[in-house]
Length: 297
Image (cartoon, rainbow, N blue to C red; front, side, top):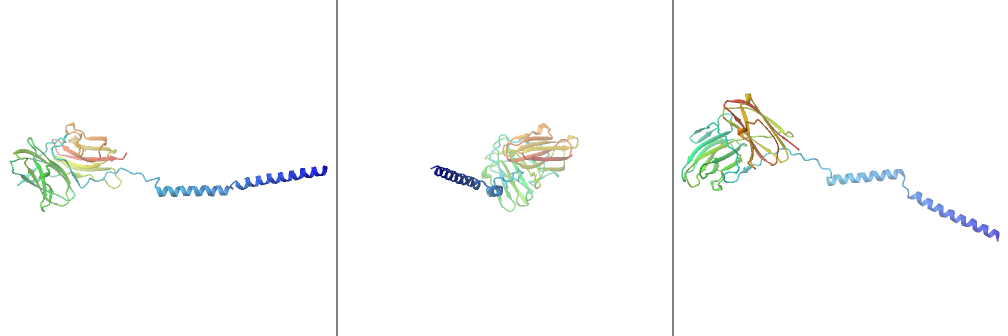
């Protein structure tokens, strides 16, 4: 009997040892080796990087670089409200209804009268790529504008009723500007400008212009900028004989009034639009340097 008990105890201990050994082997087999862990992490990182490249999770930053104006921009009919203030300027030469800009200027004002049902025509030459800006005002009912090229191509019909128009010229030639009365005789003032385009070099945000301006004359620039950019315009002239006038062509806001005599402008832009920047000479001719800068946010 005693021998049987001893055998039973030994058998029990033997089976218990087998069970414990099996549990330990299972635990060891489940634990990954350091090499397996490193391989798994590397494969997971590679998969995430590939996914990022495919889905563009990390796109390149987008910079708001000043862009060119649309090929044509038309203002609505009727006198804009509020309209940009108009400066007096030296009278341009008009020979046989041909408008001749004074040397070094880009702006001309012509005063005239139209009789009832009798349009009046003016001719001026504009080069390919230039902007042509026209604005007419009158004490009575404002006449409408019409524009056509010497080649016979119509650019603007008087039936549109526009009194303010801006377009980019695609062909060097003479252009006929017609003032069409609105039913009755009327005195009018026609403002004609060929603004200098401000085109930035690739990657640049600033441009500098140097020139000469005659007494009481105007040199006009057109620059396109986008909402959110910071504008900085600085004008230098001999003895301060020139000042700025700046307004937007879309919102028609005068950002720098002529009467202010200001030579600098800084602002955070709230509109994406064309900005007209005018250099205005005072009583004497002067050399000037104009720096225009649009900084990205």
